[in-house]
Amino acid sequence: MNLIGSSLSCKRDGKLIFSDLSFKIKSGDVCFIKGPNGSGKSTLLRLLAGFIKVWTGKISLNNEDITNRNDIIYNNFFYIGHSNSLKNYLTVKQQIDFWEGISEKKYNFEADSFNLKRILNRRIYECSEGQKRRVGLSRLSIDNKKVLLLDEPTTSLDIENVSRLKNYLKDHQKKGGIAIVASHEAFISSNNQDIILTLNPPKNRERDPFI
Image (tube, rainbow, N blue to C red; front, side):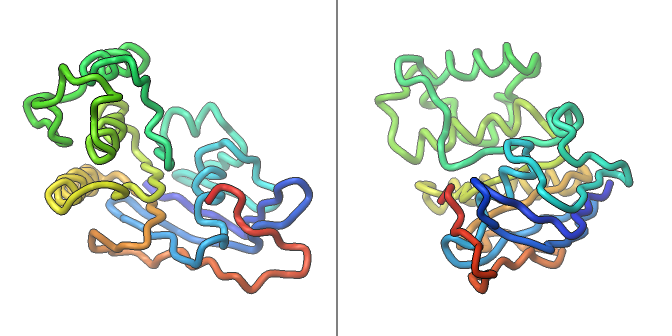
């Protein structure tokens, strides 16, 4: 599997966020998006997830042009942003049941990659921020897509649970998956050239609106 971005540019409300961005990522790669706040890290992830249209350039998956092809993106990409997208009145188990119903796939409680067994009967509003993040991350295991797009995934996680996420991503690598991560912390070894964004814009460039 390979994911290639060629001369990508993105605009929001007529303002340029980034331009002429190219990268090539292959099976088993974890790629970090790096750059200062406002440089476009979150926007790039949302563009790859299909939430924002490519203005110019091309995205290819396995040598097939998937630029602005949300049908293909939905089947192969999974995005987790800053929000955990949880329903506060549900228990953790009910939230997982809801996601399982949507994806028609199951969370592997035997492996329990995100350490949820002990809090299954807890209401979401009763959970700590770290517990909520773990519940949100459980969707990675449920949906099990080939390309993971993660925006600051270690937010609110303690050392033990950062290690759990790291182990999950290592397993994803072994299966030939790809992960693209926006994070201030390189918490897992990256065997691919990172994507570097800068704050040296043309005059009409705007700061990333999603940070």
